[in-house]
Image (cartoon, rainbow, N blue to C red; front, side):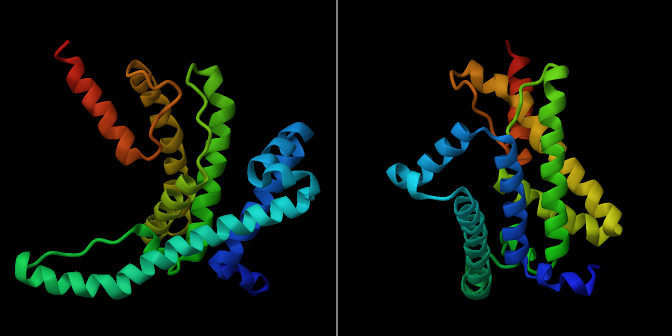
Amino acid sequence: EISNRFDFLREPNVATLLTMLILLVISCIFATQPQIKDAMVMVYGSGAADKNVLIFILEQSATFACGLYLAKAGVGLFTAEIVPAFKGFAKVFAPGAVPAVDVMVLFDKAPNATLIGFLVSFLVELICILIFPFIGLPIIVPGIMASFITGGAAAIFGNATGGFRGAIIASFINGLLLCVLPALTLPLFADLGAKGVTFADPDFTIPSLILNFVLGLFK
């Protein structure tokens, strides 16, 4: 539950924009001026010199929120329009089949849990950046979209089964998985000639580790 004072946060797109705005402001506080300018040049090209840093932050926050909205709208469209057509097709060729949709279809149903999942997962990943050098693991830079989608999904299911505590624990574990598993798979891709490259989500990294273990038995 969220106080009525923060009713505007119940709109997930507004909450996403404000969250990204805060994260980008914090990033700019710790970044050097050349680093900020380099980021602006990547976005605006030669027109970066005419742009204000605050405008840059606002635009990037809005761009992320709009992109996520479009992704969720696409999932909603698929669910409302395409799934019924496939169900008719399945009745003939695959009786009893159940359509599967992207987990983002749940985000509008539980915006508070989604936001908690994103923030907790992202915070855990930032903590991992500080800890990993001391335990011999490579630093994994957090992926915003991975943190939002898998972190939000983890918190939704955690909240449904264990309330607020369940949402926190689930998104905490998700943040760990998004850092620990990619760090473990990084050497595997280096052996294949792709240095500094790894998968992000556990559904890719876990099979990679299992396959590497199985193949290692035949060496």
